[in-house]
Image (cartoon, rainbow, N blue to C red; front, side):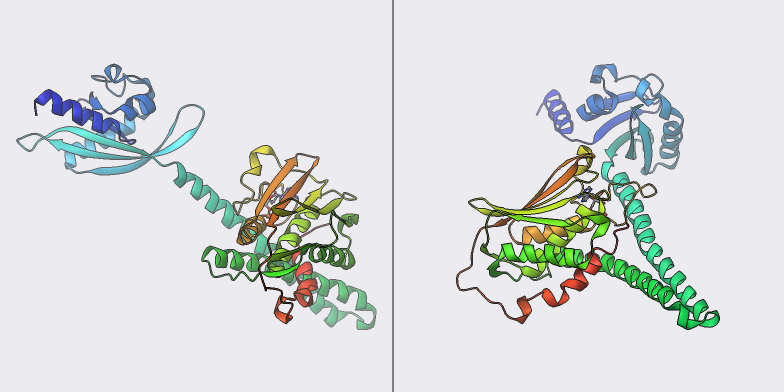
Length: 389
Ligand code: ADP
């Protein structure tokens, strides 16, 4: 292998590496760099980089001081050094991870520095997500706990100082507040447990062949019977009176309750919520449509991701830590179904769930375990506990 051939081969191998690689001499002059470093990091062809120092390359000038200090450390200590740095191209900041290695000559003296730079795009995003998530969670639990504690203190005061006979109304209000706030905390922890169970694949899917139309209709009826939030009645509309398909009743109930509670939560007073069912050849389509605040185009892709409450913590109008839709999506997917959303800001949103139009042979069971009605009222109370009117 002649020298030219091996140098070329080596260079083209290094050019395929996405990390940014460079080699500098002791005066800080660039002797070598790979293609990623030249085109993506510096933004110049290699021949405009070779021989140039930090100061001479405009992109590197802001990092001249810190770069020099780090280079000196590598040369003096004769040791590899790793550090992180935030850099900016004027528009956006990004974090990079830099490895610097001393390269020695035949006498064991440092001859130059080999640098490898990696982008860290996700680390920063992850830490932001984590920060936002914990502050949301803290708020989400603290608010109801504060409300419960205040109500208990009020009850204590009334027991000590009031004529109890006249306090019935206040007692009922205090107890209601305790109840609602306990349900709010229960909802958050239930959603977390379910999401974790789904992710660890320990949630069981128990489909039965049953009438999906009457199931969805009875959920709407039960919500209307329970309470009219923001003066909104749920309107149910269907193309077909009965449709037997295979689905998990308890899970479908969670899906529909979550979508309807969001449709109310993010709606205006006197708005409307329409739940409709129509048939496609391969799917039963359930649509939950509202006339609420809508979702910005940029946020639509992230709302099913979990912890994606798209509102700013301090300006948001509703409670919730953005777990409900992530859970709903998983539950729909357990049915081999899909969930999509169409939305326009200030006009409203429509969530569309497609459940496969299939029936499992000999699978019709309506035993006690498949009936979820006994607990439905509790579920409704819990699911709607974070709607403020
Ligand atoms: P949360 O517990 O915050 O309600 P979800 O996962 O149910 O969590 O929803 C995630 C986010 O998606 C909500 O915080 C809200 O910003 C947005 N969203 C969900 N449903 C609607 C809707 N019907 N109208 C407007 N925004 C919605």
